[in-house]
Amino acid sequence: MLEVTDLDTFYGRAQILDGVTLRMDGGEVVALLGRNGAGKSTTMKSVMGLVRPARGRVRFLDRDITGRPSHAVCQMGLGYVPEDRRVFTELTVMENLEVGRQAPRDGVPEWTPERLFALFPNLAEMRNRPGGRMSGGEQQMLTIARTLMGNPRLILLDEPSEGLAPVIVEQMAQTIAALKTEGLTVLLSEQNLHFARMVADRAYIIEKGRMRFDGTMAELEANPDIRDAYLAV
Image 1 (tube, helix red, strand yellow):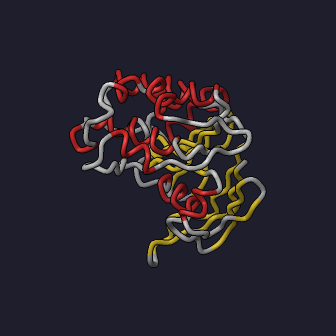
Image 2 (tube, helix red, strand yellow):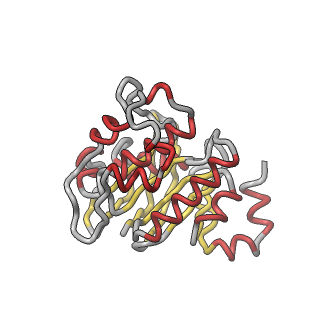
Image 3 (cartoon, helix red, strand yellow):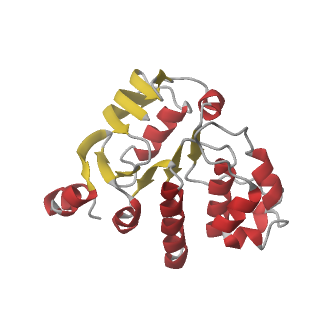
């Protein structure tokens, strides 16, 4: 589904990613773990074409998408939920969803507003509310729902649990589990190991732009030295 090979990415002269490599198969939920500033968001932006890597390759569905414009990557079926949510504050929930609408894709569940309201009951109760009058957790749900309106094959979630109340984090975990049941492939970046435990099949750990661990969640659980070295606060 997704293969990232030897990515080097810079912001100006500062190197952020150094040889980042990861791969995902269809239907997996994979967590990209690391402390703040480790390179998680830059990895996702490099995949999405928001930042152009200096070296390396990104392949999606066996097609080279390295450095392609983000709108072209999105049209291929790769969805992205940024860390800062970016809802259209003056548009209603329904209008935000319509902005994300794309045509159905073969072999991918077709998402409609009503299906999304079943997945996010809170949104159903505020379909005519402007995005700017929603809580942070509600905006996060809306951003994910808007991305799903594009009927993606794979969705990138950047820090989906950050800044959310514990009860909303639990709801977010249930949502990701439901998306996996639908056959969606999910890559999520996280600092919250507890959240990753609830949803992920496998994990990568990134530190200072380099991959430090690649394995199943069970293998990570069995390796406290790795957790303490790269994830402990």
